[in-house]
Amino acid sequence: MPRMTISEQQVFLAEGGILLHIATIREDGSPLVTPIWYIWEEDAIWFTPRKESEWFGCLRRDPRVSLCIDEQSLPYRKVVIDGAAELMHDLGEDDLWRDRYRRIAERYVPPQGAEAYIQDTIDQARGLYRVRLGSSVVRSWRMPVAGEASDGIWAQRYYGAGTKLRRGD
Image (cartoon, rainbow, N blue to C red; front, side, top):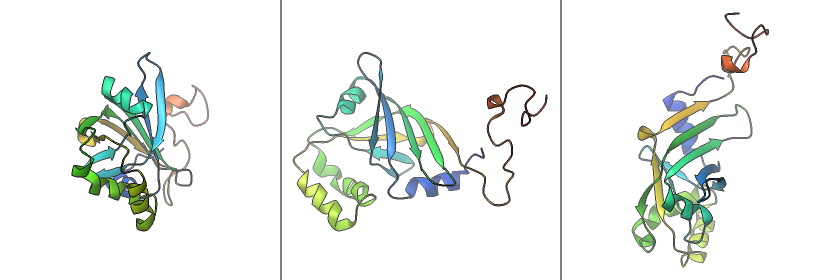
């Protein structure tokens, strides 16, 4: 599949309504994947686990994450980020970054609903994390668009030797 350009990635990451799936590591080493809200700002992905969430505990023990941001409809754009989550604000510091949280909520619900959600959950302590794209491994792809070849779009390692779309055999 074609890789997205940096510009295409930025446009995609800024679109509202697309969930991020965050993979963290439980204490026993097993993976935990959680769909969450996020915002892309300052070349970083920002997100806010609640104090009692399992994945907040996972991040406290081990900041390594894998993030998957993808869409269900054509052109099936996907951005996968492997990196380390940085705790930017710990529990009890919510007032310092509530405007960012408001911007996150407004990506998923209209402003009035976002404000109501914030007020309804204001007593739920949260942390604020970011994953910087510049210090992470970022992979992206999408289906071909008009004018691009659509045969053999997958990485060559997916095509068996001697098959129709395998190049170089």
